[in-house]
Length: 223
Image (cartoon, rainbow, N blue to C red):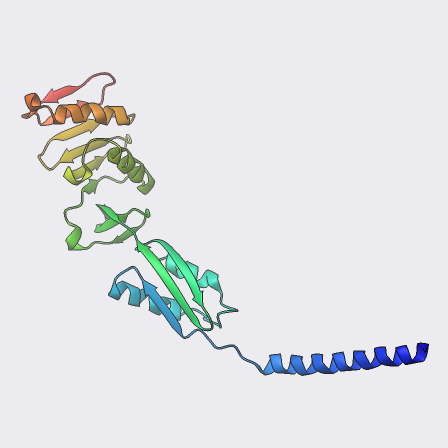
């Protein structure tokens, strides 16, 4: 009885090894299809095509062995990208959905004009964005983005700003399209801008040209 049981066990082991060997050979000979279709949307036709070619130049394997970091690096290096989502469509396709950055201002960098995006990156200037405020000076991009956020939370309309001036003392001046200049201290707050806005909307002060709030608890008006 014991011998018969041992024979059964040996037979099962032999069959298991045989089937396993056949499967291993099949796996070795089987090749997954390489990624052959990449769809990118969100940047516009020309910029989609440029990014597509850059991604195709990476080492694209099949969808199971793809080095996602290479694709992510290519996307992150594109200054037009705000955020993105990558979707795998089996067996061999990728969909990349991109949200394009919003351009906020123009700035001079090494003698050339660039656009500052809401993603904090610089892009080549496009003359269709000439109405954006021009920044004079050399602020850190993060300082500008923080400043822009406070303006957006105030009653001063960003679209009405013509130029921004940044000084080495880390303070800002705002020049509006009606040529009124607002001089801020480096310790400006939302309350400061709120007070400035009250003067801007008061007809009694319609002829003023400068609103100077650099001194704490004081406002100096010049016409």
